Length: 489
Image (cartoon, rainbow, N blue to C red):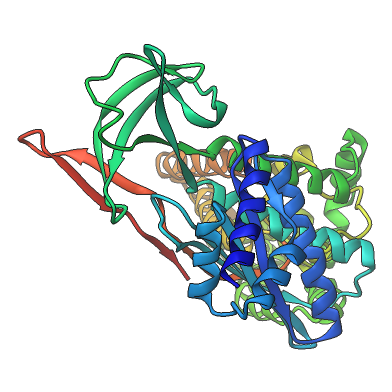
């Protein structure tokens, strides 16, 4: 068996020798149902394809699994030792679990060589609700999306050692690496303990002179894949936007502008019933029930106690009475638009995240800016962000009312003359509140323009990342080493 294993490792090494690119493979993604098995196979395919297109040489999973099975190598420790002997740099494994109403994908990436030494460098878990009918095309696109997201995070921290060797009178990088830049030079001992020995400039793989004896120790630099990580993230996010969003049009923004008064006026009935209830958006309905009633009360009171109605009864018109009337008109014609948008758009974006048919009215930056300008928080609800939407909805509604109130002029009924006398407004305070409102609205509009829709399918429930080792110098110039760990749950 040892001879066979040696031949397999030799073949894998020869495969890696043809390419300067690091070797990567998938040791297997297990599943529990036929649907999960299909997703696992598609996921493996996309992981290898993305790696192959981003500076890696790949080994097909069936090759690895066949040889591991042949030698009864099924434990993690054995698989990682096999990968190390075969000079594989990156190994991915995982599971796909089908819970009928949802599918959970768990992926792990192992850095085999220095500086990770067969440790997990990225663990990724996502829960995908199966509340939307999915075609085979959409199934493939969803698996590709999460393969790309997982690999983008993995490659943002992944590094490989590239040895320094002597060629005639100069020092060059092994494996025909032609990198250029300033790099830290490391050395390692038999236990793979590494330490920094200084920095050097590299030009097209050729190092500047070093005061080290290449023949005495193994010296190397660490090559990262941050550019590949950024490229993967940017490409797949841009492509998803192109798939699910139609080309934006100014006429779509004008259409939204035209329907704002009608949509805002219908919000008290259409949003809870036709929006949240019909779409089974119970979270949205609960938030609506907590947020909408105070403003609906102010709107109703503003119209019932309007200055015209109070004058018919010869009652005083306070600043609050007049301010509520103005605010009621705002809520009727524009102020209800944010909750109207949230009640429908949140579900639309959920559908779109599964690569459904593109929507002409979504993904338009001009529309997001318009909605933020005409009402409070609507631009962020349009982007699908409820937290910021409700933040700006409440903050700017309060600031708007306070501004209107300070500028409003009260009127008092005089029984003797049977006429009204005007009081004074508080313009100075009105200017202060108005200035704060203007600043807050400016921030809101810019924020809505810069923000992008969260189109990720499912929810990342667990993520564990181990960045690369950290080296620095203490006060005496001695090297200090360590590892920075980020954990997100």
